[in-house]
Length: 310
Image 1: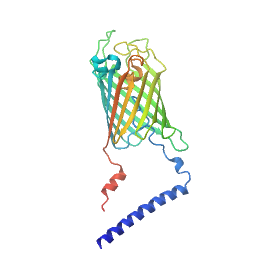
Image 2 (image 1 turned 60 degrees about the vertical axis):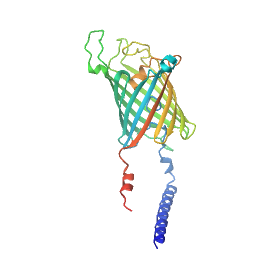
Image 3 (image 1 turned 90 degrees about the horizontal axis):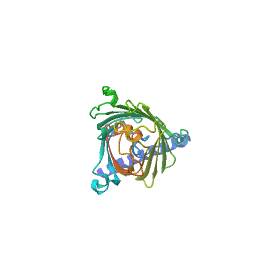
Image 4 (image 1 turned 90 degrees about the vertical axis):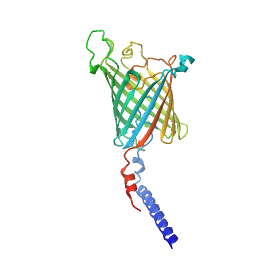
C-alpha cells in the first residue's frame, strides 16, 4: 500500500511539472515577441576582462573574493626567477547589491593603494531590439605610502593621494563565442609631478573574448591614451606607455582562473591606464586572477523552496 501511495505521489508531481512546462511553452507560442525580449547573458565570464572591468555584474547577494597577482619582468632572468621574485598582489571583495548594481573594495601592494568602486548596468542587450549592454563604473583610489617631500615645499595633503576614474562600458555579444567591449575612460589625478601635465587622462579601452570551449576563452585588452600621453609616472618621473594584455579565462566550477601576459604590472585603474612604465618589447609580465564567488544572500526563489515543507 505504501509503495502505491509513493508511486501515485511521484506521478502527480511529474504531471504537475510537465503541465507547468507545457503552459510556459504555450505562453511563449501565444506571444511571438517573448523570445525577442530575452536578455543576452554571459557576455564575459568574469566581472573583469583582464585588468579592466567588463559589463558583467555579480548576482544579487553574491560576494566575489578575488586574488590578483602580477610578477616582475619576464626578462629579469633566472636571478629573479623570470620575475616571480618581484611580484605584486591585490586582494579585493566585490558584492552584488542588485542584479544591476555591484560595489567593491580592494588593496594593492604597489603604492599601498586602497580603492573602491561602484558599477551600474544601465542597458542590457536583448535578443532583438537593444544591441548592446551599457554600464557605468566609477572608481576612487587612495595611496597610503609615506608622504613625499614636494619640490615646491608645499604641504602634502590627503587630497594629493586621491585619484578618480570614470568609465562607460559598452559591450556586445555577437554570438556564443565572440564578445567585444569599448571603454571610454577619464582618469583624474589630484596631483601630477609636472605643471606642464594635465591632471586628466582621457583613454579609450578596447577588449574582447573568444571562446574555444564552454570553459576556455582567449581574452585581450588595450587602453589607448588619447590625451596627456606623455604624463610621467607620478613619484619617479618615468616614461609611461599604453597597456596591452592578452590572457586566457578558465572556468573550474565556482572558480574563474585568468592567466595573462601584460606590460602592466599594476592592478588599479589609476596605474594600468595612465601609469604603465613598461613596453611590450622589453617589459612583459606574467600574471593571474583567481575569482571565487560565494552566495551570501539567497534569492527569494531559493529561500521559498528551502522553506517549503513537504
